[in-house]
Image (cartoon, rainbow, N blue to C red; front, side, top):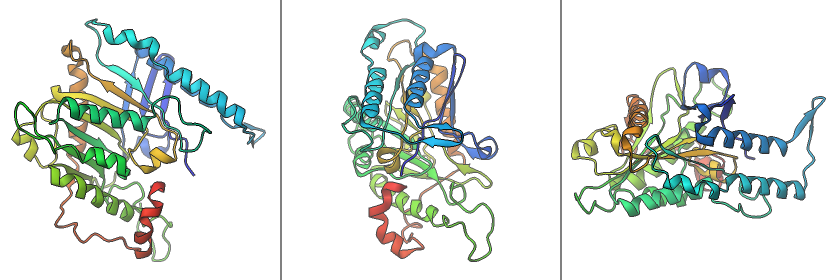
Amino acid sequence: AGVFHVKAYIVDDSLILSGANLSEEYFEDRQDRYMLFENGAGGLVDFYSNLIDTLCEHGHKYRDGLKNRETNKSSQEVLLDSLSNLMDGSDNSEVLQDESSDIVSYAVPTFQAPRGFFQSALPFFSDVEVTRNLLLTALELDPASTVRLSSAYLNPTPNFMYVLSKFGTTPSCSSGTFGAAHLMTAGGTSHGFAPKKKKIAGHGNGRDFIPSVFDELSREAAQHIIPNGGKVLLYERRGWTFHSKGLWLNFGSENQDVVNNKRAYIMDPQNVTAHILGSGNYGSRSEFLDVESNLILVMPDRNTKNSTPLKNSLANEWNDMCDFTEEWDCEQKQEVKLRHVPLRKALPFIRTFF
């Protein structure tokens, strides 16, 4: 079963988008991401306010401690119509023609529903489709573009892995250099399901095997992207868990010093062309089981001066996380095996749940 995974917090005309929940550890020792939008953010706050209201209106309601489980086909149709109207961006088409000097970035909200939740397909592009199209378009416009992706639970679907593996395969027409795909995820020390305390033998919590599953999934991802110049970075910070998610898309060729830097730092923030933040982990569970919403920020190709502070902030955020990472070593990880052999064999059939 999936979960409601959207993380959006609104107070007056301010909005915080995040991948974080409001439990105690997120305020203490859990690496996550937050972005604050103020003064209505050009209608973005109203959009998320309406999205929350729409989902609440069609959600289960608790009365006297009991949940009303009544659902029917007509209510799902109404919800789908409401979401369709909310996601219709045709009224904002004139924004793309706006040459105002105060535009920092264009904001494109996305929505993802569990597969099969509605009786019919979404009448608008889902988060997965928009993200995939964004990356494919980037490769068409600049074959040497670079994508950096952070996911607490790295488990790309075959379709998404196919797109990521295309980065680094075609050189820039102008410089002859290549881009790459760099993936950051939790290492064994900072994994969200790693045992928090030493346990007496035989008294585990039943989930101690999960980091080993993601170790195997990371190995699979590494096999696809490392041959094309990409890196898999494992976040290892003692006493902290890793829950960060996001995507950094860079246009422009990165010089050889950048290509060779061990942690895949963003050396030139001005090359940050688009960014995604929100609740999705870019994996099977996010695509097939959970309700998600991400936000795509696209930097304007004019008035770039106004985007400079945002680009610098996004680049610094990635680089700060890189400080605590170790690069996946194919030679050292060559013999990675799941501790539970039966589970390893079952992984192709159950990976949707991770």
